[in-house]
Image 1 (cartoon, rainbow, N blue to C red):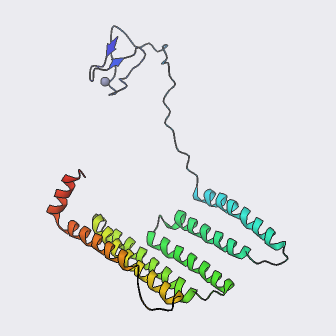
Image 2 (tube, helix red, strand yellow; image 1 turned 180 degrees about the horizontal axis):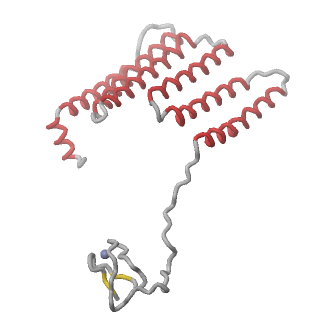
Length: 233
Ligand SMILES: [Zn+2]
């Protein structure tokens, strides 16, 4: 029985190198027997097969084409297209968002978001046009615009302050609080004919408090060190 001269691990007879530290095994009393094969197969690292983005988009297009075709056939059986437009436009929007995640995301997260919000706006415009709902300009687009500006602002901030995560989270809390107020205001204004806010004050106050605490912690390096020590971060 041999042992590794470097790490002391017990060595099998058929190995040329220590399995633990890769030190070469030289034992004049027990020379390496080339005919003696190890009782396990050679290690072959698993190489991940990467599917190209083009192939992925092609497969997804086929997957999306099936429900679109089914909807068209089912809707046409009533001799006129009525409801299938909603499903087809929604699927088209989802496909567009997947394309932007696969293609544009690597270049720019901000550009990806602008593309996504553009696609969602088009879907909303279509639904409004078809259903004659009267909610697009006064409710859906302002709310989507608020959400879009918020996520774009937080993404931009995360890019600029890449190491100061707590400050980014605190600004995200402020923005989320403001979004709640916008949502509350738009609901009241559109569906209750009132210019006021109600429930949104609770998330606004809590999120502002959380954001303030986080920004204070992030700007005070002594406090940050103490907290990191206390919570084993
Ligand atoms: Zn060793």
